[in-house]
Image 1: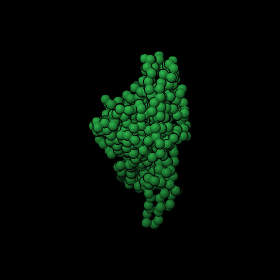
Image 2: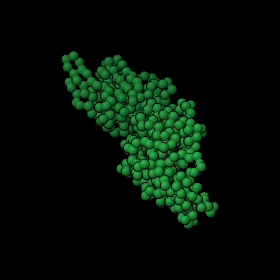
Image 3: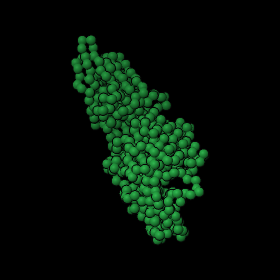
Image 4: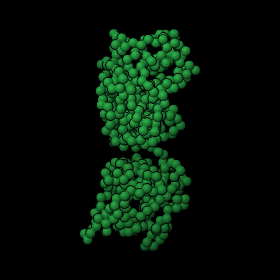
Length: 473
């Protein structure tokens, strides 16, 4: 066999279905090829799909015909010996449902078949050997989506007609002949997104951002307890593409107690390690929400490369969670600060005090920016939808740095109360004789990286005005 062209990956009319040109080096002794070469192939655009099983089909005679099967996993298919006519039909939900693509496969041509695309072939030579790598272990419980080889709508142009007779005829199993026509095939749904911590402030905002999206599933603590190993075993993770972890232990002061310390590490670190392991094993994209508390506040502006320097237990447990998520190949760590959403939060508390005629003392030596949950949720969706580069992103609302006392005064003013009703005090004064966690003195997060992806968080001042106005309704 002569030397084939260089390694190349070619797109097809079916999204995600890729043809691969494999260099085959031959001489009078035979030939050699690298059938699967992860580094080189992924560099050319082939998904890093994580094969776990290699299957081989030997076909004794030309005309052997198998399919059309859409298994719930990805496949990398090649011919070891002989030639085959390949046919692929998109059986996934969407406008491409029923689209056909065909090509001839020999040792120099392979194909990557994504989950939900039906695969079939007909051998063109005797003794054709057909090999495929898959990224899930075969299971008798696996649910296949099947299409009849003779479907009139798709109309695969088989080299040997399926109803031919004589010595050169198509060999088709009775089982394959009994598969449904296209009109009777239920399209393969997309893999789902699972939102954990769906009942918290961010979880509620994510519910709003993904409202009406059938492929997004929301799980509060009652349906998925992140700290419970049993919860992980209750899911068929092959049904999921992405997990958004909005669950956390956030009681920063309680975290300094013996009981709170254990709870913080259990939820923010140990459970996140288990979640990261699950993401690696099942090739999930993992979005993990972290906090400005992983820093000590010693810098005027924290970017994504700043080293961890947490002051208290809460920040330490969140930094440990970040370390675990960082080993997941497809991950987003989204750091926020001073979150405000639907639920208990600082702005709601200040508005309540203003309504009751109170004159609070508020810390004036801790500065940062508010993060409104609706914008945090929108930013997370933007990262996923835009397929932004994986890694860490800071995400708060934009605008100048403010102290807690300045924000409290803004809330009072928006509620029709004088700003002077808020008295600024130092952290040492405010927390005197109270059990309190150490807090970063400066929580300002650099937004340059997320803005470079095309997401620009709106100013905190405008969001604060809208939020307080809704509280008054």
